Image (tube, rainbow, N blue to C red; front, side):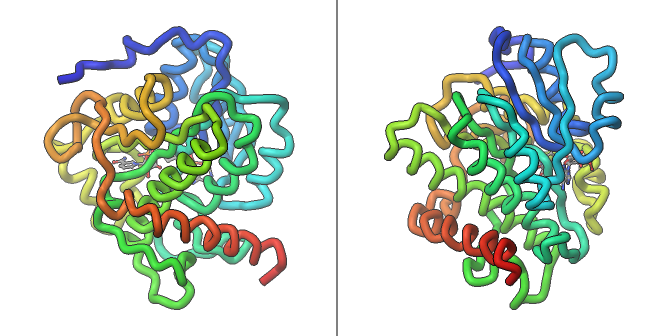
Length: 288
Ligand SMILES: NC(=O)c1ccc[n+]([C@@H]2O[C@H](COP(=O)([O-])OP(=O)(O)OC[C@H]3O[C@@H](n4cnc5c(N)ncnc54)[C@H](OP(=O)(O)O)[C@@H]3O)[C@@H](O)[C@H]2O)c1
């Protein structure tokens, strides 16, 4: 059994890491540990001032830049302003089981935050990425049903938890197809997945069931929940590796490579999801 912890991080000096949603929760722990290991960490956040306060006094090099992953204009602006290359992109920002809401672009807020915005960000930064992209997903992708004809919850009645599950399955399928494309292009850049098990963070604050915060005996704190993300970001894992806690049900424990759900390994659906997502983003650009 693996016993890997943040103490086992390699020396990250000279490496630049962008982490979305790094001002609190799992993203903040990930940022703190990578900076401690020597990386230059860029906190890509909605409120850079707040994020700067969160890392004030911590050892290491931090920068904070504005990014709202649910706002496609903000995603484009972040990518356009990015100077030079970056080594690791960690798509961590997320929301869970939030009430129905639309973004400034008219897109479903939960789907855009968890999947569509990160899809666009990753693609806009891809040719400047030297090492890997880490997508933070959830074991709940296993329960998901993805409707490729209604990715954005227009035709069906919106359901907060089903939209969360579907967005996290979309992330898993995005990684699968991205890795296929990278491999086909002969790229050394990797697309990898990490899931934190279940952790007591701000995530469940939105959730009506609030199940995560009630099941404390089953859950991690953010410190432990960040370990699979740190492992996926720094260890020599294969492309599209699915890293999560090693314990029963993948809920808690030290990080190890596991296996995504069968629905997350469906290459045909992954191949269809990509153009469906591009069409969704394209519809925003053309004003629908
Ligand atoms: N906690 C769990 O049990 C669990 C389980 C499976 C997967 N995950 C995943 O782990 C990731 C981190 O979650 P967490 O548990 O650390 O939750 P959290 O404490 O609620 O943190 C979520 C982070 O996402 C950021 N965020 C939300 N919407 C954003 C937007 N539009 N643009 C930029 N940043 C945004 C938040 O920033 P603000 O401070 O600006 O709100 C916050 O920093 C998420 O992707 C989540 O789905 C968590």
